[in-house]
Length: 246
Ligand code: GTP
Image (cartoon, rainbow, N blue to C red; front, side, top):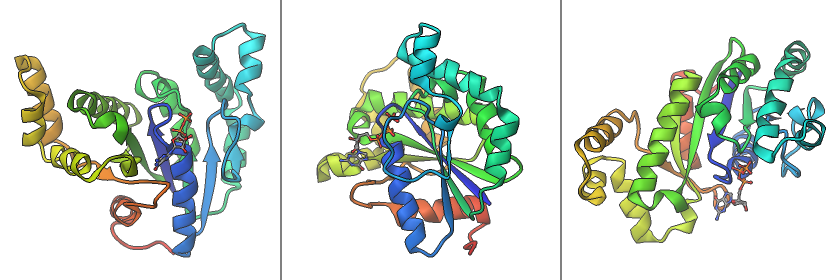
């Protein structure tokens, strides 16, 4: 069993991607399941095989503990961890080759708090897992935002300690010129040029991050099914050493 986590900033397209990528894998004849880890989501476009909302409801937590929306989400995940044994049992009952995991919009859980790592390892257990970090293209088309997203991606990779693939989501929202420009940034030099004058610390930071990217971010669109073959190929390379697991 392989686990594919989808993380990203709020609204980056995680839920839509999970649904469309599941359909894509099904069309390839692969056996899939989906886990929803977002306790605050109201509607899902897919039928989850495990739903965190069966254990905790962020709205109830908000009212009960008089919290704001963000802190209630963080508290909800902490509460979920008190039910780890039951959750593990539910997840162990899932039978599929690929399990896609939709994560909360509150990316802080994965970037700055240990809860993200605890819950992701609780869920994937001893199985191989990969994290797909979605960088919203609409935000990333500005060079400084692109760099900020790469920094966030590094923070999440550091925190989760999983192989990670960066993907530029919603690429269909960019025109050809924007799309070509953003793709060229993945190679490095042109991003540094685009940033213009930056202080020495920022220059070195950006250079290090870009030079150490395993792969340039993959342009994808969940609504237009763009980039799925490439994304799947890289996932396969990481998870199964290049061989389809049928
Ligand atoms: P949160 O869980 O709230 O953080 O959101 P999310 O990251 O799960 O994003 P979601 O899938 O809910 O998508 C947010 C919005 O972006 C929705 O209006 C989607 O229809 C839209 N969207 C998602 N993927 C794409 C895409 O590939 N292209 C375009 N144009 N819109 C997209």
